[in-house]
Amino acid sequence: MTGKKEVEVFHPSKNSNTFMATVEIRDEHLDLAVLSHDIPANEYYELDRSGSSLGVGDPTTAVGYPAWAPGDPLNVRPGVVSTVTVKRAVRLVEVTQKLSQGMSGGPLLDAGGAVIGVIHKGGPEEGRDFAIHVDMLSDWLATAAAQAAPDAAGPPAKARG
Image (cartoon, rainbow, N blue to C red; front, side, top):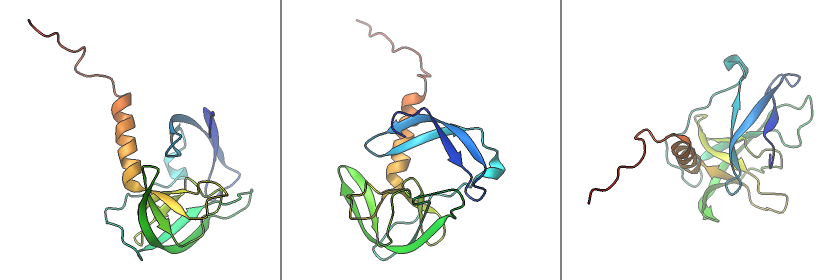
């Protein structure tokens, strides 16, 4: 999505249905973006954020479309958490399942189907399989929202002297 203002989004189960979305916010370092769209609510899935802490050995499910082509089904890969680490100031969840190019941006889910991370492949040379921890996503979204919100208090008050 580098440099793009609009992207085409494919329906997860009806590949012939495509929608346009606008890139509102993008973070190159985290490799995350916020998209705005007019997609009808019955045409997409909303996932809950996991409230549980992660531990080594916890079951996970990675969901995405590696090397996607029209007609390809959603790819679902089970695995487990192998470690939770920090790399280049980003909190990451390393998993045992193979995360292929094209799965980036898809959810990493816990045993209950709630989001614990956003898949981040990191390029073909990356030999380890990571997802950005959902806490990093939440913190980034809160910071982006605060920066986008207009100053409700008005201009700063002048000091009396």
